[in-house]
Length: 328
Ligand code: SF4
Image (cartoon, rainbow, N blue to C red; front, side, top):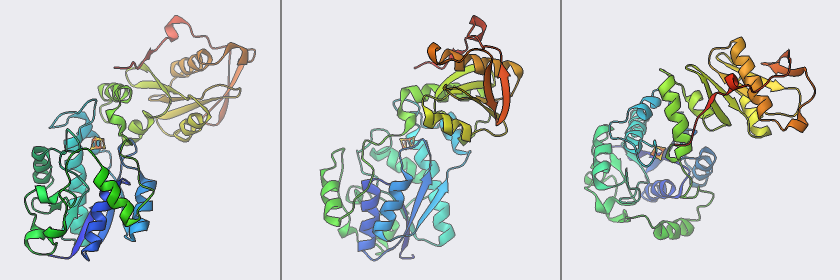
């Protein structure tokens, strides 16, 4: 077996330490960051950690196929809509493919036995290893002493005696080790995945209920603005501040139309088929969410995907009262 591994780098402390333990044993470590904009990993932190460790870092997008994991997880959800076991299986399969591609011997993760209630108990750890196709090839250096030896340990590629026996949720040991190693800039353990947030999960459920084939872009949009379902295939998203307005405008392309008021008010992104009715509802929602004293006298001027449009005063009449996605 090659003395070369793929180490999943999340930007957090645990994965940084796991990779570091391999480097200390002279293993050639190749970092892999799997990009999931709503997930629990942070790309800028992962890049910073890889730089400190002096290892190459490959950044891969999980792709739209990941959405099937959220839609129908074989092992169910955690506290909200987080399919942690299935999520890890999916990610570790990608890591396994990357391992084959670069000719690495095994895959390393920063998982710790007992740290997370859903995915890091002994049984889920075994399921994840088996279902990701990495049986014997998935090394968890931080808690390896609690687990069965993996192939790299059995073959002497990795010295099992130098691996750790950390378990549980406390992180004192990891913190001390990270400090001793001089590593910094990692994400805090509390940094969370949006799928564990009930409000975000409510919006995700609405998306899956109405879209047969949602995309990662649709998921990314769930993290921006206030969402209003105005039709089976149509949603209006209102920015809550100027940064969100700009982000919504950046999403204007085929299938997504942006109304940018030419007065101080939120922008609206219409996700779904464009129609006169969708335009009227979006304008009405903008008016409803603008302070009356800030509304200019009619008519009202907008940009629609960069083209000027003038509306008579849009009123938030009862028929323009779309269902807001509600908190679960
Ligand atoms: S919290 Fe769970 S679902 Fe979210 S990214 Fe982490 S493993 Fe995946």
